[in-house]
Amino acid sequence: MFPTRIEEMSRTDIRRYERIPCTLAVRLAWTHTDGGDRYARGKCRDISLAGLRVEIIETIPAQSYVSLRVEKVDVAGSARVRYIRRSGVGNVIGLELSQKVRQQLLDALRETPSGS
Image (cartoon, rainbow, N blue to C red; front, side, top):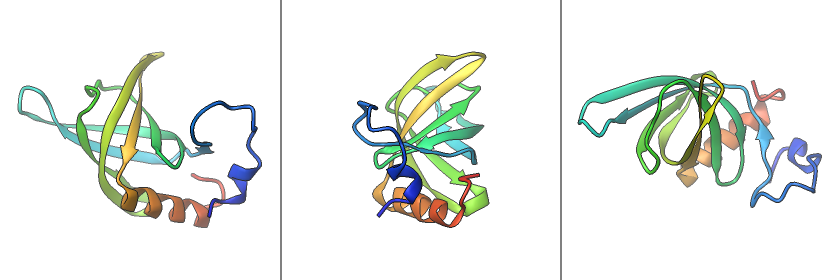
């Protein structure tokens, strides 16, 4: 079901789902509250059964819907921003992926040993 990497992760983590490290580039698009289209490039930090964590410079409001594309593994679809947190000079966002996109991304990571 999961790559062996996830089985090797620490069991002391209290998160709901275990994380698989991921360093893939991600492109995001969304409609801002002013009605304009916005675009951002980010870097995936990890993926879990619930979604993925992405580091970006831009600020995307929580609960926004975004289109995403992970070009290296040719996966695209939609997601919802569950949270946004300041981190250094940018932000870290938690994306809740649709089941289809989540499965495509997990399958692609199985085929990409380093997750990058």
